[in-house]
Amino acid sequence: MRRAVCPGSFDPVTNGHVDVITRAAALYDELVVAVLVNPGKAGLFDVEERMELLRAAVADLPNVVVDSFSGLLVNWCREHDVPVVVKGLRAVGDFEYELQMAQMNRELAGVETLFVPTAPQVGHLSSSLVKQIAAFGGDVSHLVPAEVNTRLVARREREGEA
Ligand code: PNS
Image (tube, rainbow, N blue to C red; front, top):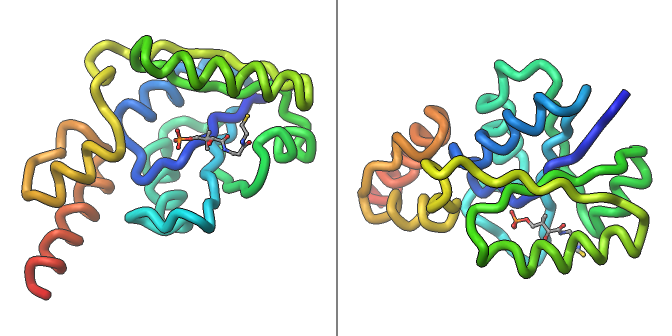
């Protein structure tokens, strides 16, 4: 069985992530989407909510499972016997840091990295921009899965009332 992991913060999942996950899922028997638990960075959604939103976003992809991890990604890969990391590349700017991490992960544990160039329609997308636009009342419904949009709108309304 060929397995790979698609790691990230996913705070929250965007249509860009879904594009990469969908295309990677077509290449492997099982794709694990793994959310980083980062105690030093709270984020907008907690890890459980990010996982819930991811599960809703990939509900139509039967070979995708959602998990979380903390610490080194390569340790998670070793423990779960997953030899490949999948990363989306939006632009040349992403490549420099991603290349460093890919080389380091291979050096640390022999874990390979597969880069998937994102579809041009979602190349400008990031979770941070989505959060910023949503916080100021902008419409992000075309940039994120439906449930993510619902939660972002609900949050803004709650914060507006407070
Ligand atoms: O969505 P992000 O924030 O760009 O994802 C980055 C992530 C989580 C994939 C990366 O920071 C990571 O792998 N963190 C785990 C810690 C680790 O393994 N660091 C060493 C990398 S060489």
